[in-house]
Length: 326
Image (cartoon, rainbow, N blue to C red; front, side, top):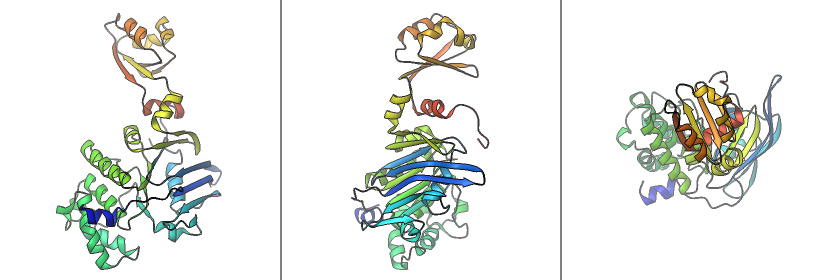
């Protein structure tokens, strides 16, 4: 985008009040409570990530924030561009006018070209044909799709479709983007390009509410993380804070012949905590030197020494068992 187009479709925001404030949300489906007393807020220019296993309540939470599923208790507040306090669902139309949404599923119209998908979507926000024709080239350029303006979605790769969905979500110059697993199914190159574009949006002051199963994505993009399971908040903070609070700083993975026996061997005492997962032993420790020295005496074993990461945090808080649908 050139400077004029960027100012038009990605104008910075400068409010200091939270854009979105969710307090004590509860959602039940029959006897099943899928969101339980969940509270969080998103500030201008911030990316908040919601992570959790399948069935944790992430998508239901997103749907409540979008006014698609009414909460059974709690409230959702939004601060408009004019500083007005709005509430969902009473002010759903006013709130939605300032949101951009990229859902899990492809919702592009297969009968329209890339530029027509943007035009039709923009018309739902009352944008004129002249405004849409002015904004569309910059949006397609931002999505690296300028050469595909006349192509239909069926002619695009998965990464191109996701970028078109993002471009379409920006047509109304939203202050908050809501992205539900935006890079699922993409190859590494497409994921990295999507990350680059999302980081550009954050740099110009957009706010993002993101759900993801990719821990590297969460660590790369999110200022803060909300870890949930069974609809409850387990932890909240920056990625680095959460790792420091919940996980020992060093991890040694050990596998190979005889690795499984280490879980009950004397070497176990050289770590703060150990887990056996399949044929791999995970040692969690504050000081790995003596453990690594002992392991080096067993050449049949293979080791990986690394710092603790978000995946370690995720698995400690939510468990390693496979959930239905995973």
